[in-house]
Image (cartoon, rainbow, N blue to C red):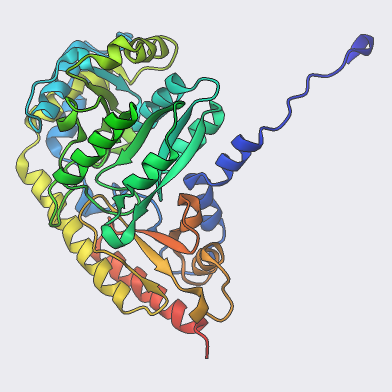
Length: 417
């Protein structure tokens, strides 16, 4: 620099670096890079929840037509209001209200660039000096990553595998203090494949009210339920405790690349409005990117015209895949599943490295599996659970069978003699 001036230097943020190091996408890219390029077999992607490339998971033609109609109309080429187009917000309010005992208003709905931006917004508006947020373990690490960038302290409560991955409410109470701003739940569950029952959700609401915090309910996998527990939205308990619901069309419609999500306030008692949370959400939306206007324009038609047959077909395919996954896991001695999944697209399995000869942990297991068998699964350390694995079963059944065949061969090859 001229005139002896010092160069501008930014010091690394250890919390941000740590959060980035367990970014799901980054880890999956590393595993893909480790695949043997000389292996002529197709790579089996059991590591992330995007089944859209598979023919069985093609989105509905009515959803595709809605996007085409919106683009060709010429009505959605301009900027949208920062909270989102009113017809889209009204359609989402009606769509979500069909599962509730009360009616949401369009004013309760804020449109976002997918559920990822919904997470970013909520974490950012809650961050203040000394504040903390309660997150599930295992959980979706995007929350930790966003909290690190916002200097919001994270405290982890446990999900209990022996109880169907229910929230350990005792640990929630033990972790909470006067600086706790909210707790996050994910149902249907990523990464566990669980669905919280009506009774358990009510207990969560009552615990949060007792602690004077509100609940952020991540329902991006809403309605992807195929087991014994039906999907129940946390917003049903908004009269007990304020609930902020995060969601999108990404998973139920199998269109994660369309990037249309929402934040919804389930708050009949107006506590979020009186506390300033609602205004902070609006203020953040004023300074960030909006969901594509043509996607907002397509939402009413997507929600109205998609037939029930499409949803039933997707559920049938996922149910078959979950059955295959659960049965094949039983055939592999080094992994075990504490509970058959009820929903979403994932299952958590425990890895027993003591029966393997040259594998020390879940990271080494997934690295060698990718290299030797061209199968990609997510190591549990990325989700806060060392020596666990997250397996995605939302792939073609034939690919899933092939993937588990390779995992079984891999484990047999590395088993202690």
